Image (tube, rainbow, N blue to C red; front, side, top):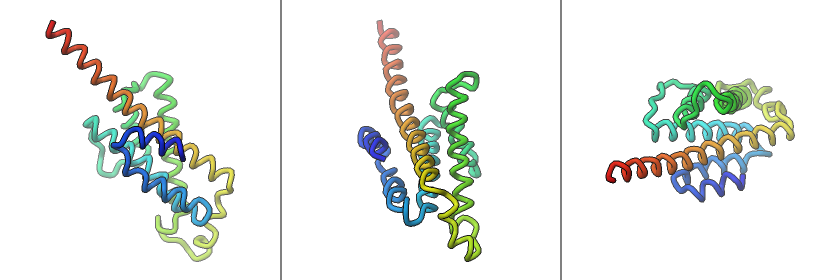
Length: 166
């Protein structure tokens, strides 16, 4: 999670995301469902912030998959290239994390007592690591793509303005 923390430190706009990271780290072993809930919320928050900053409207009931797809489009990835195929795959990871949250979270839809006791056993340690690492890769990529493209757009606008002045 250090790479995500370093990215957030580099781009202060995202500082509030640290609460999700703290919750993810703090519950990896004791209650993985909390980590998954916060992983989903982390990705969804990043996607919503990107859409908001790029003035892309989202439906009030948008799924995490829809939010992430919209965010990738807002970042300038067209529907017809390899990067968009990858971005759709990354959005699908977010969607699957949401599905897992619904399956193991004690607060998502209520659980029987047996389900509540066994919920953390549904995901082994290797899979837990993979899910959290995947979340972190997507989060870092989205933040950096937003921040680096934002600067590139600003630079391009400045160059255009200079040319118009000359």
